Length: 232
Image 1: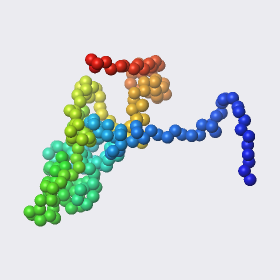
Image 2: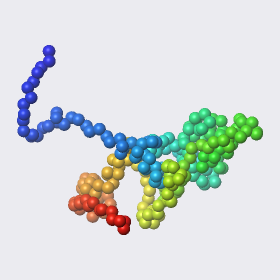
Image 3: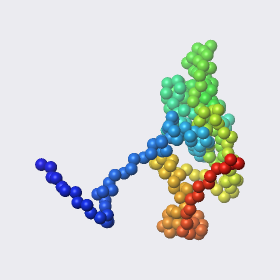
Image 4: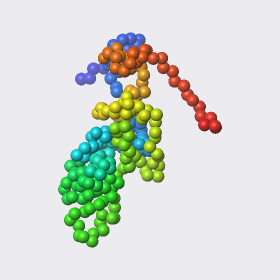
């Protein structure tokens, strides 16, 4: 038998846990970055860091970037490739591939893929086979800078030049790239590093001084809307 309770209007006071149980849904238009998603298509118009240079040694490295399973490698001629992870022949993962003098060779049937996705060899095919010339394996342009490997994952007609920021000049002398796996979406990470207010507590008060004593100052934050004029 259901118990009927009469709602009683009460003033808003403390201990409101029962009434605050709902967790807001995420905003998929902002947080989902897989192929075909609005934010995914936007971010694919920029060069994205995909792995560390030091990760590319004798073995390929499997990576997952913006909802895509990829493999990165440095072949023995020193060129870097970022390819779709699964072999376009039978779907074997190229993370188990063999780094060759030029490109990467699938471990299952020996197909050889160049860094740009060109199929160089198709063992098992007749000598006069034109199969390798009929299509390409998925690959992305890469750029290596400051210990990081960047890939451009968008349409080729929109590929920008790799940006040259003044901060790159600091990498050799005072900065070192590093990788920290974080199980969250890109927006949560961005919200963290553009938020100066947490530096005083997390990086200074709570866990001692991480950077410099100036990070211990309590910041005062103001936001300004800059209107674009006709002159730019």
